[in-house]
Amino acid sequence: MIEATLSRSRLLSVATAFPEHVYDRLATARVLGELFPSESRANLEDLIERSGIEERRLLAPPERLRAEFDASRRGSTSVERELAERAARTALERSALAAEVVDVLIVVADSRSAPAGLELELCVALDLRRNVKRVPLDAGGACAGSSALALAASVADSGCTALVVVVASASPVVPLGDADLNTLRAATLGNGAAAAVIAPSDTGWRFAAVGSWLAPRALEFVEGRASTLVARHLPGALVRFLSENERSLADVGVHVVHGPSRPSLERYAALFRVGDEALRFSRRALAKYGDLAAVSVLAMLELVWCDADEVAGEREVLAVATGPGARFEFLLFDRRPPC
Image 1 (cartoon, rainbow, N blue to C red):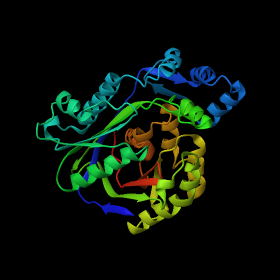
Image 2: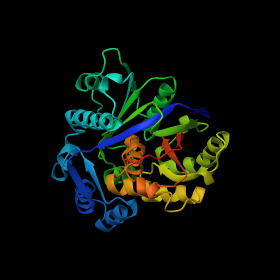
Image 3: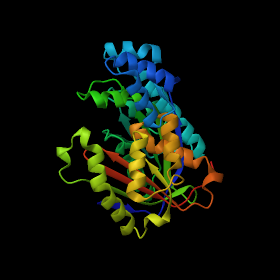
Image 4: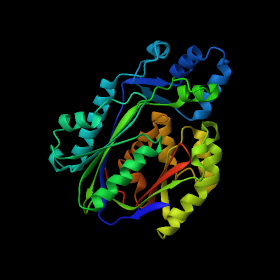
């Protein structure tokens, strides 16, 4: 376990931005039927129902997704840049900090067609200082956004202000060799961007602790074994993270958990005996946005952040993200300010 206990770093704001093209259940069923004509309509509708997703947003409209797939195109990088910039501007505005105070820019592009030089374009677009430290991170699946927040927390604990920007835009119809996995991706993945401002401050959510854990023999990871690996390794890793920071599951009031579908959240609830109330923001974000991969945890944190009345008096907030190779990221917050 790699972890750190922090004292000065605060999450001052978080914001999201999404494409305009909305896929509800009807649009998703229609597109899946076109992409996977050998699958029965009943099976596809059952998959959509079990996913727990009500709607999501993608870079291409439903009527063009078939053409995008046939042409092996993966979306417009100009849209990705616009989403990243919009999320960053909103996060800075909510933090009440000027762009020139940002010392470190951390950028994650969880995308198979990541815009080249995105961190450079954001520096110019946001009018950041010329000497701002730029840190582009390689995508690590859904873990990447949480990894960026953890790095920013460490930066802030040393006295610097960090801006984190995460973009998720991998095409949901890129063939991966596994028919079932391709169908699941096409039914659940969403596109979007998120940004957060982390700084040493007396206000905002305090980062109580952050932690990373990598499962043994992770390089032998196979996509289809993801749920098995998580079930095997996550309980011990999470309990150890909490205990080493003098906490237990009883101290956690809100669980912010990335799950690509409703069954994955149900498995988490069963593993840790977590009730529906504790996972309500995770379920809400999944239903509203679909699987946002690296953006997921930030999108869930925004929902918690902006619902002050609902979380009044709650215990601590725990964020959990899993990535390829059964890698885990943990974030623990002990304050929940109003939006």
